[in-house]
Length: 135
Length: 376
Image: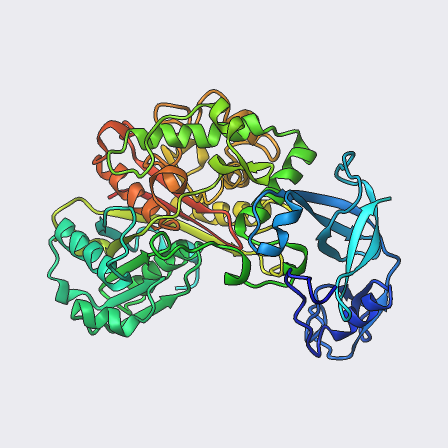
């Protein structure tokens, strides 16, 4: 895995570490403000709604709906060449935040509003990417 | 001064200039910008040492630019190398003139992306979604257009009308980079880059530079050509989902509407008064989004609006009469503003819009701006 994986990896930092630790354990999470309850993604050093620094990574259901998608026929990184064309999706999680990921498995019946659910792709020893499939 | 509308007709464009557009590996941004500056100075006949305001965009260092041009301005503004900066720069310059920060402002933009092989994606512009291969402004616009197709039934054949019409206009412009006519079938047969977008939905990447010289309407009377007035402008940012760059869930509709409404109110005109529209066309869908936000058609109806060559010179709304970013030159909005000036001066030859009195510029981007130009 890690020896041959040649796609970009997330840049893990103190602010987003919780997300990637949860993903590694098979849990999808969004940053949740402990002051006002706002849920958002990607990670922000303060809550964009109330500016509190008191935030945590709240586990979510992994269910969502498809907002849009795009099929990449060009590889901007060599690691994606073997996957062309590959499908990127925009998902609205049942809990509210939107997230970009890959739509994997058969998605010939993709349409806006269709139900999707998270699947976990362990790409290296340390990184698991949350992806989505048609529900 | 407290109301934005009081800035109506407080600035005028007196000089415009540009380089040739193409692949120039032996010249840098300063060299290209200096050529455009020389051309704009000659266009209006100003003594370049009168210029006391300087705006630079996609030029590495403002100080070096001043050194190259022999200028020590009173007021300087540097803008980042993003496509959405032309509208910001021109509006800031107009405001600086109205408030007395400067008497004559030169705005300079240069791009060497063709000769230096800029990719506009991948490791050049790292983002939080890179692990999923989501990158590039084209990818983001493809995701927006897919959404538009899903919500409103817009088709790729309708999208093709944008590229076909703008290429037609480029054919009327002897200086455009791509002038060979294309058809809807050509568009539909072009290779996918980020489906649903194809090669012909993408703008060019080329080297070149653009310069505009602005002053107040009173001072504008002293120069060679009739001034073109900046009669209205407006703006609205969309920053709260910036981690998905170049994308908006609502196609920038609220932002374009807000910016357009401000500009129309200031200028005292409405969409029906607009003789030509210069719409930022980094990708063809942006033109559709612009038409909807400005109210040329209702939201979701731009696909029908553009059918039948509506955007061609001679059509019901000429758009990007120079060939835009799709076929003339990738000058990130700056050349579209120059084209607005040339149309109002009546300098456009085969692509001239008859009786052209009102030209609107719009950039449907995370920094949405619109500017309305009128004949002085």
